[in-house]
Structures are given as C-alpha cells and as structure tokens.
View 1 (cartoon, helix red, strand yellow):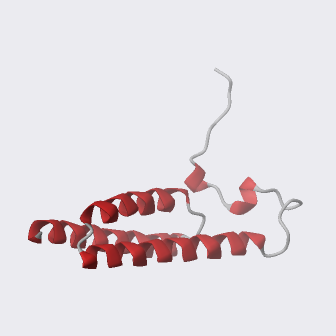
View 2 (cartoon, rainbow, N blue to C red):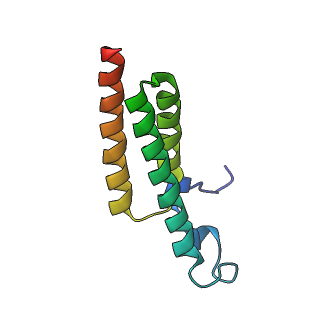
Length: 100
C-alpha cells in the first residue's frame, strides 16, 4: 500500500487543482463560468437534435453532457440544475425514439 488517496476529480475545486500561486485573480470563477457556458450550449444542441428527430446524435451528445457534468467544477446548486436538465432531455429523447 502506498498510502496515497486518490480523490474523484469532481470532488476537487479549481483552487485545489491549481494552487493559489498558479491561479490569477478570478480564474477559478472563469473556469466555472466557461464550463457552465459549454454545458448550456451542449444541452441546447441536444434539445435541437431531439426536435429535428436526430436520435442517434442526440444520444451521443447526451452521453457527452453526462460526462461533462461529472468533471465540472461548479457549485452544487448549478450541478443539480444541469442534472435535472439532463434528466428532462433523456425523457424527451426516449419519447422521441418511441414516436419515430
């Protein structure tokens, strides 16, 4: 046993990953904002794919969105909101695949 403990990446904050001396003022917040923007854009793209009937690509993007959420650095309230959005899209995708 090496005595090392490995944390899940989703449990670590930007400040833990990047020591204060390597993070400039506001960079932790910038990382969070960038990830929120990327996930929001991805969810919008999935919604559009579902509406257009592109089930396969929507399913692939949904898997990508789930993975992005597990590694995202943001407050838990934002993660919960995005998680509920993903659940909603999963339901929409299932309904769309039944109707096609």
